[in-house]
Length: 456
Image (cartoon, rainbow, N blue to C red; front, side, top):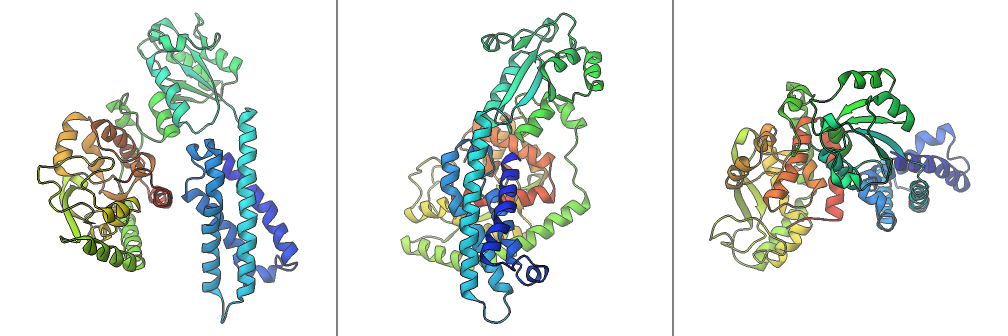
């Protein structure tokens, strides 16, 4: 959020200034109604920065990679602004004006993106953006929470204090090695007092043993104005996935989510029909060229059909462009592997660019899949995974998807552990489903198309 705010502030400050220098009358009320690119260029710039993942934690931490990608992303945004401006032009467009606007947008927003990321890096190193967390408990659960915050947390710097009591279980030895003074063990277990002393922004309840928890102390802390949140709810909000290792059925039952009204399903189906039909028309030439390439490489079917599982455990035939040699699974179904020898040369390119999945747009039009949802697995793998991973079948509460929350957050999975990790994201999606969330996932899929991280 801080980086997004910096981008917005810099764009609002520099873009009008650049326009005034180039066109002194461009910001006059009459000019704004005639030349909408004044507003569409910055809007597309911010949209593309979000869609390509330049606000994600990994991109923020890797400043060099973000800065190197920013010009391409800004150029894509400026290109969209240019196309819209040309489409809205009455009569023959003024190409010199359009070219100048594109150049101004590209250069201005590139500078804004570069400066914003340098400013954020400075703020992080100075520990200005520091969040103070008070964690109740200092056992294994607290240690795992600290590890998740370090690897996946939204905040780039957390000041963490641990409050413990012997009734909450033993202290994890790995936490005992932390700097002195980090773990507080007062006899009175006065949570509110410790929260005031450390200036806590949030109190997280994460003990290994909850039967020794003094709820009156937590209530006092809440009355004192300090937000109190349960461990599982914090992980869901902060990491944006479900912690399957610690998940409790009671928490799933009583917490919000897992609701799908008639309006939700109607809107989702309408969304699928509009987006998939539009994309099928736009990508038809690309799909035709890919089919010719598959046929040119050798004999065999161009399209590959395979059984997959969708909502309520129903089995359907998914369609893809064939990327493996004929009879690749003569010995039986196996997980795809890195540098799989069964993949053809054309198939490797199609997989890397995700072009092989375009025929699935037909599955979406048929209603067998949705545009956004958990990735469909094969029945033989589903049967095995459901017996080995608790709650695995809950991902089938919604239709399988062409893209999904797990696909944009976790690399391609080809093992039981990978399936368990992806399920933590799939359950988060099912629990928090909304059309807005689908739009967010769809936008961020662009990052996987531009910079594939796990296609096999």
